Length: 538
Image 1: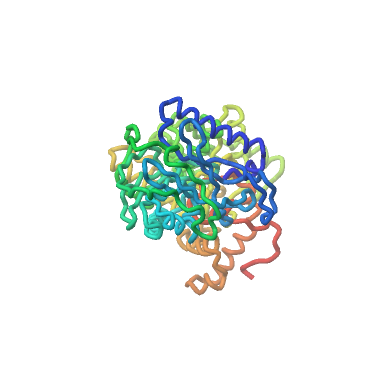
Image 2 (image 1 turned 90 degrees about the vertical axis):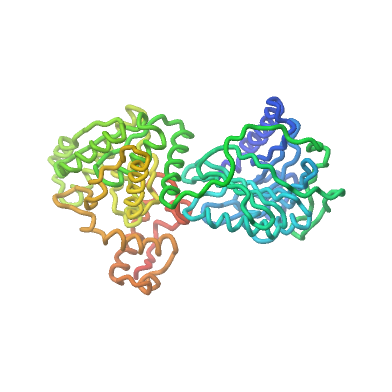
């Protein structure tokens, strides 16, 4: 997920230097006798003419650190080129399956996709008679991926014929979230340990692993593993046990239920984006509606309410209950709150330009966007855009208005899921004896942009349950119009919905990044030309 940073020689060298520094630091802190595996960016030592890249091309790599040095470095063999992955653009593949002997046990090493793809590393681990197959992973979170991941690890352990450890990172990087969920299974696929999701920690296990053969592994095991990186038994320690370390977590963590899992991903993604980009606080326009209420709840959970600032920006069309709901949200969460009316600014614009209809409606949204960015500049907050996936899909948003912001926490969340997540968050609060953050009225009232008298979303859109079902087929699963109609949906509704999706591409291109929770979010996953005369709906 380095993107074009991987193409900068200076960045590659910085990664290699950081790796050597980490090895030395581990030794300085008394951990030099503990073999440590860590991912890093490396460069190839030899030319790879079949890939058209010269010697020194970047590689997605991992290293074994031991005794204050980089004892072994190896590169990822399978380079994914789908979804958010562009690894063929950046890297040349490795061609080794390293095995290290640790305390008399042979440990085969792999990197992420090497475990996900059939063949290669897994059969080679069996051929090497490894006692443990260990894979380091930066596999982005998606809904329901934890079940897929568990079945994969079980299957690979049975194929490799040895205990298998799937080690996964947690945290966030731009729109991607990593949920951890590290898994260790025995050779039969029985789960020995599973780490909690979205939580950093140290899981210490005592495994009964078979002793290595007296001879080192053969230099070649399979046709796609041309050679073997090998560390001698003495290099990675003798027969003594590893020194004890603090046990922070362990055992078999139960997976989160679906709503808690998605909500945790949204919190993790926002927290990482804010922290890694050096922001101290966020600013949200609070309308009293469900979207801004959920975003505010996520922000308070991610950063603490003391770092969340909300502003109500009513116009003459804003209902009294919406103003009250915004204030009630602030009271429940404890976030900073103020009210700034846009009526004087609105009157000045309409008096000068005599705007009516859609132009008048969009002006209100753009005034709010300008006000938010002014406060951001003045006070240093990161503005959060509250748009959901349903609105972004059909273009039901105002460019340079409610699309203003530096990050969109619910960008990949359909409207029906927005309601469900708000209900879950309130229920979770009640279960803990705490105040539910989202006002009930924000959940139960009909959604409305409140840009004209009596406006509701269904004036312009199908009911959200129907709309989201059609969008899930078209956007997430790439189903065509005829297939969607065949699934039981009205052709006129499908044609109108797909036309809205197709013509809104230019808006989505200008929307800020946001946390990805689905297999196909708007961003790196789904890349369509803005200029496109072809329409699926014709």
